[in-house]
Amino acid sequence: MKRSWQIFWHTLFWVSVISFFIFIAHNGGKSTMQMLFIVFVVYGIVNIGLFYLNYLVLIPRFLDKKKYKIYALYVISAIIIIGLCKYGLAIAFKPITYVRMHKPIGFWQYSFSTSFTSIIFIFLSTVLKFTVDWFLNERIQRDLENQRLSAELSFLKSQINPHFLFNSLNSIYSLAYQKSDTTPEAILKLSEIMRYMLYECNDNKVELAKELQYLHNYIDLQKIRFGNKAFIDFEVNGEINNQYIVPLLLISFIENAFKHGIANDPIMPISLKINIEDGKLYFFIQNKKHSHNRDASGGIGLMNVKRRLDLLYPGKYNLDIRDETDTYTVQLSLVL
Image (cartoon, rainbow, N blue to C red; front, side, top):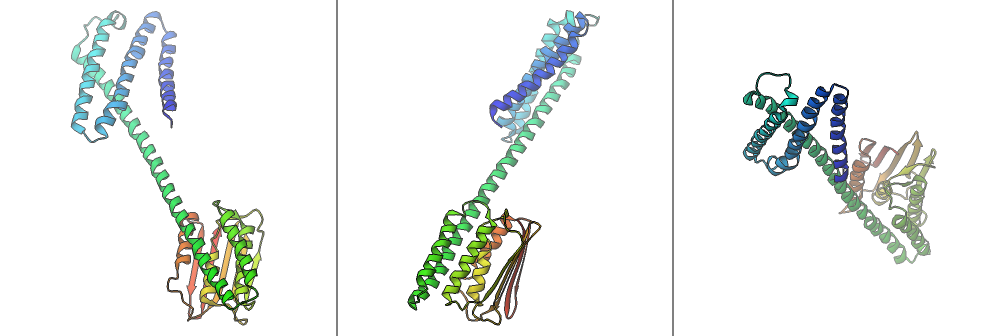
């Protein structure tokens, strides 16, 4: 909250309180009005001064810095000084406030009662200060945590493009090395994919339809790489319009299937199924494992996507990965 707003709300509160007691005094008799005016307005201003002396000066300078003895000394001194001021005001306004009393004003008795009032205002200002500081610290901690998470997500996302580009260039290099006629088509597909990754994925979420088209382009690129001998059953069911998903979230699973699996077996093709139902996405992919196709630096993509799921879909997803002898299966469900 800006300081100007803090001043506004504090001023509004105290003006409202004092105005309330002035209103009560105005409805009473003349002597009652004078007495209440002195007790609640004049003394009230003194108490408010003590309130802000503790709130703005003593707590920040001493209590927050754990100078407890010095803080206690200043508080006791302030209470004594305020008590003397109130006693002086009581003597000055004695004809009004004590017009019906025959006994003289007892210093110690009066000091005890005014000290109790001062302690209440000290207590209230301390509670307010610690409450405000607690909420402020909570907000700062949330902001710092959000900044940390944003930085981590940016870092994870920055890893995706080089990782994907590295794998795709390897595929195109293989085509070029074989002098395949499909090399220009593969380069064109790669350019479409990179255009999507560079210009469409800057928001936190993208249209699910665009993300699925990106997956189609990637699969087409892999089919070109395999000389159209890559076998994959790709099904999408459900309503994909007006649905949004975190970009580049599913590609790592598909990359992994092509990279570590057998894609050219028509008897056991890669099975990829995506269902959208009641605002949830169900993703399934299964591939036959290739025991000799291992990446020494593998696992970056899958570790990346797991971390992104933890950060972006906390408590809203379920990931089941089964690494069996002959097959590798991934099942993911998440709330869109």
